[in-house]
Length: 390
Image (cartoon, rainbow, N blue to C red; front, side, top):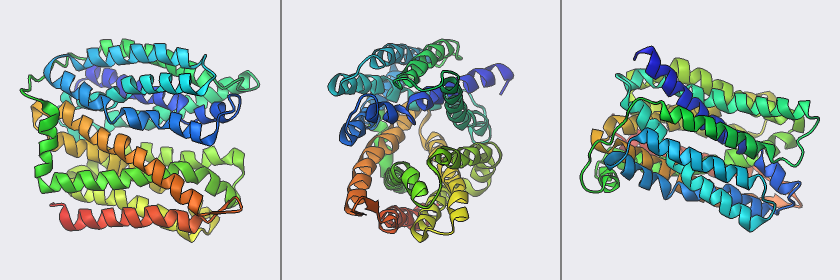
């Protein structure tokens, strides 16, 4: 891969996740704080992206595979997203904000699989070259968080918290420009309905096992996101140190993406790379169930980073490998639908239910909470080992 596509594709990956990372980790503080929304209302606003990714990736994949250059679709979606984010920053009531964020998520959700399919289409050896592009996702997420923190420290506060949405909007404008300078990625000219062809891939037993395992394992990942911050505080880590503790996972993700992903995927193949990733999550949940010592719980954050790389990213690489060339956009849309859409939405509902049922006088029984994702993920590991062909 020559230098010009590499830098353009890297910028594309960086900004895609910078936009997401600008608002996703911190918007809840604005909703629960200055806007005084309930936890249920906050949950529904955060559910807009999973809901949107059940629909928009299917449409985007169809457009990219049959009708339009993927770069132009990405540019249009991010331009619309910038307008909606600027609007959302000014909204203070639940229903108008829910509508704005759902509309935004419909556009942003369409871009997640297209960034992957555009990247893969310009790599001569995707298994070896894509980790050098994927590395910019965790880097962007971390750097934009530090940038927002630095900005708030300079201002001596976060104001009403709307700055995260404004920052995401500004980054979306930059992303629009970057999308327009990507290498030409014309439609493959797939006939019929590419998404139906992607769904027909489920007739392959290996692909069917992978999709079902992804649905379960990615879904219960919400236990980590919804429970970890509170759990770490309950075991004695101060609130101000929780973000830095959880950032260990992002550091591990970046290192593993750059130095280990391509090596494992090329030498072990998709099956055992996915098994390693799923097993890392199972081990983390088991450590959470045991609940001690504290240093092991902190060090266990590395496992989340490894799991994300070797299961989620490796899964996207596997889809690119097995999907026919003319429907790769739709195939990437399918895996985003399963993981980020259906999986995360159902996972949010299950995690919330389990946490409510495992709370006594406002205190969570964490061993019971995390036993659920441990058992689900362990079942996923066994299914991959027993049913997924080498």
